[in-house]
Image (cartoon, rainbow, N blue to C red; front, side, top):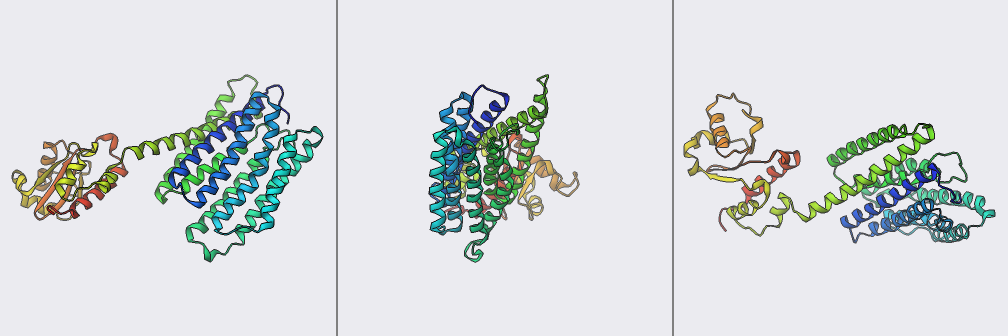
Length: 404
């Protein structure tokens, strides 16, 4: 399509593609930060860079009405199959057949130059050939992955292949909508939206199982809420129809996914700059328990921490506390009375100790002799991750010697 007067469809196409370019750029930064020297990471960065360049050039071309940029976007579009082949090689840890490389490289150059020439008489043939070329390139990659020797790959690598197959099946319908010459009645191009969904899934797949479930729930919430927002926003205009609703929904979903990727990347950057409790313990040069506790006191969660040895617990009946805490490691005040009745003498002693320090947690370092830490965890930090960190810190402290 030659850019001309701006229409609502062109505006939507441009916004979705610019969101796709930004989102893929953020994903590239995230992947590079996680594994800057990994061979598969480098190949992924090349492939994502080609796709991000395509979305960026297209978005600017359609927004500005530049025919030259619109024609030049054919070059990165034609190189996408080669990028996919590079990623396939990285996953399989072996070179693809030379004829496949030559075909995808030569075909990409030829079709890219043909599209960049911008000849009207070749617009339809070039669009058809480019669509077939991209599908053919993806088919070659799919064949190589399907025919792989599963025994030579690790379980995690075979799992990645399965996820890629599912991702490819899901993204192909989105890619097809990008060929407006072949499908002129489609209200908005969704190729960039499909790419955003895939990179979001890739970043989620690299997390742990529990974190994956949480990330999937948050992503589902983002998708559903953004789709509803777009649906509602479409009716601001009095002449809203199905096509306009689809455009608003696509813009809202692409925008929310992009913002989500940016927020997640920025949060990870901030967390890497300020080490958490476990990172502080791991990096600490402390060699004794007192030194390690002093190191922990620099962290906000442990600012109010106070250590009590058995001799300092005389007012709380150490013998009674020792028996009560014999099978307990970390006590949370919200869990009181910890399976007993509130009037139990041991419960009363522990509650009294916690109230004296305005503590929310009691960490048991040693049972005989009794050695505990009382600390107050701010309500904004009282989440499952902090509870897990406290349990791990307790284990590390209990294993740290009193003296060297």
